[in-house]
Amino acid sequence: MIVTQRHITKFLELTKEELIHITRTIQGIQLLLDQLYSPKGYNIGINQGRDAGGSIEHLHFHIIPRYGSELGFIDIVGETRVLPEGLVSVKQKLVKSIHKFLNKEFFDNF
Image (cartoon, rainbow, N blue to C red; front, side, top):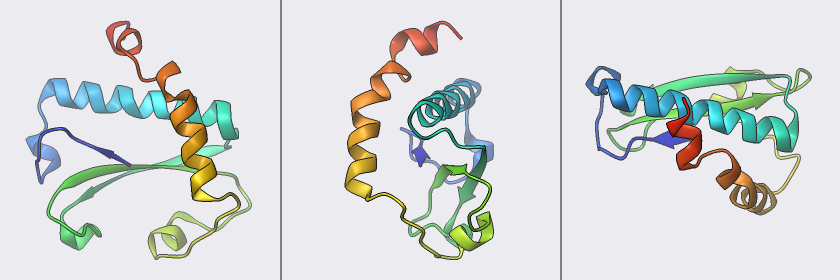
């Protein structure tokens, strides 16, 4: 999940700089997930507001790696949970490698 540093509630409130930073962050997360898990595709979504599934009024983005033979996006959004790997293990892998993809050079060289 990606959230903005500035608390906003609507996609239309994003500045040009925020849009560029968020889309570049999505690219970096995809590169990280490609290296760690080799997904076959991605669902990338935007949640805006409580009626879109948010527990509080805010804007956030999801990056969901897809593997072809699993449940569909709507099943995941519908609170179905498929956990082929423990969340602690996933977090450890992400924390260990994220600096390779989301760093000052990655954003400056865009």
